[in-house]
Structure formats: structure tokens, C-alpha cells
Image (cartoon, rainbow, N blue to C red; front, side):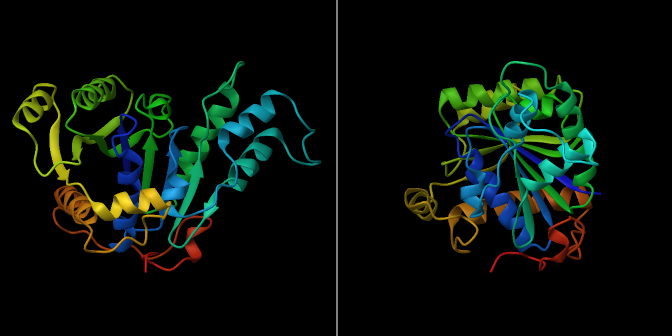
Length: 277
């Protein structure tokens, strides 16, 4: 069974940075291979992970909706769509990345979306861990891209707008046809949770799972466009995300978090366990 972690939050909250650090820590713990899904059309998870982007699922949808090009001889439409989705997957050391791309344009995409859901649901089983970087509206979760989420991690900072967005996401999550094991907030760019913020989140039914202080190394890498996978172990953000994740994993496994053998994904099964130098 894959452990599925979905990351959401208001734009600018540090959501994609957090998703990349989650991937990094899972790899460091030997809890790979990891399937990373960039489901936010405005995010840059590929850059944060230091892998190329080989196209997007949104681009495939647009191409098929426009009827551009005949199907290859001997290949059915479902087979062709699955093949094209597979082509967009970026392979790396210990993890694979699928980029969803921009929102849908005019026209009906129900058929392609149905095949995409089946593809992701089946593919997720081949990985020890799945990390989904969602947009704030959680479009792909609301479409039931995957039916089970072990942890919905809502990233916010201490600003009123970010906290309000976190509360909206928490309320939306309760309306979705999903099985979510745990929902909680990771408070970013804060040494501790200010009391008014903690009370507001608690009143909205959201627990604070951890806080991440301002981190000069994260900021420097963002300015220079340097991926986060190689960030040092002394990074305050790395330590905070690791602590939060380790406590969550210990809770859901009764303290028995064992590394998985490298195996599973169509690409990741040949990679080395750990994946991060």
C-alpha cells in the first residue's frame, strides 16, 4: 500500500517548497520510490526537485480535444492516452514526477479525466509513497484523482489571508468524497504559532502539525533557482519538515516505519534506494 501525502495551501505560502522537502525526507528515510504529482498549474515542483518537465497532462487533453493527429496504427485511444501520459513522466533517482499542467480549456474532458484517474490510481500502487502538490482549490482531489489520502498537509503562514485559505481548504476537504486519514496545518515562516492564529485554526477544526522557521538557505536557493533536494541537513526547514513527518509516520505505523526495498514504479524500480546524496 502506498502512503499518500497531499499538500495544499494558498499561493505563496511555501506549499511547493514543502512538497519538495517532503519528497526529500521520504527518500532520505528510504521510504521510496516516490511518485510526485505536480497538480498545481502555477507551481514549479519540477524545478524544486531539479528534474526536467517532459510535457503535461493538460497539454495531452488539449491536443486530443482539438483532434490533432491520427492515432498510431494498431493502438486504441485508451492505449494511446496512457502511452502519452507515461511519456510525460520525468524519471529521477528514487522518484518520478508527473506534471498535470494548466486548467482545462473549453470542451468536455470527461473521457480523458476518467482514464487519468484510473492511471493514477493504478500507478500509485507501484510506489511506496505518493506526494501530490495541489492547488488551493484541490481540483484534482475534488475530481477524485486518488480516493485515499493518508495526510492532507495544509501549508499556511501567519497572515490572515493565508489562515483564511487554510480554513477554506479544511472545510472543502470535509465535503469531498475522499478517505483522508489526517488533516493538519504546517505553519510556515514562523518559530511558533501566534496564539490568535492557533485559536482560529483550532476553532476551524485544524490542528497545527508543525512550524517551519524562516530559513536563509531555502531563500537563497529560491533566488538562485537551485533545487531543494541537495539542501544541507543543517537547514532549519529540513529539520522542521522531517520532525513533522516522522511524528506523523510514527503515529500511523505505531512507531514501525521500515524502509521499503527499491522497487515498484515503472521507472523508479531500477533506482537506488534513498535517492538523495
